Length: 178
Image (cartoon, rainbow, N blue to C red; front, side, top):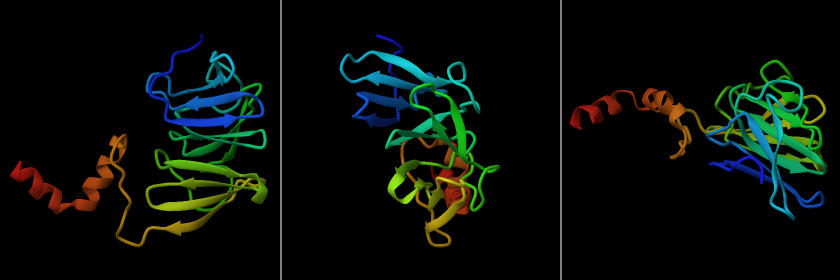
């Protein structure tokens, strides 16, 4: 029972707590769902109507470790802490919190949490960034070489302008042939 599942894009599991967390639905991108692993019952853990803190623009990716739930908000280009009990949200890092390379809106493709090293990691199409859990400061760990960009086929319609910019005249020539 509970909210429907529809094209969820991320899953994180709290095995000790007996719950799974889901987000990224095309139907309700501003919700993070909790699923009871014993019963399958679903509830909204966090959304713009549940929990407090910064608004969720589009919760896209989740990471869970040691009782901590981290969510990527693609609209804000931010990593948000989500309290796994109350659903309250706070910013770990964003363009306004922490220093270092800005992750940017619609740029974060994957996240991971490593509490042993007190870091989170965010991957974009062209870089891997480490985020200090205490300060939110970002450090560039790896970058695609100049002039190259990793492009992923699938749900990245928001990157069409980037692709056109990279291909430039070659894309215009392809359009003329079609």
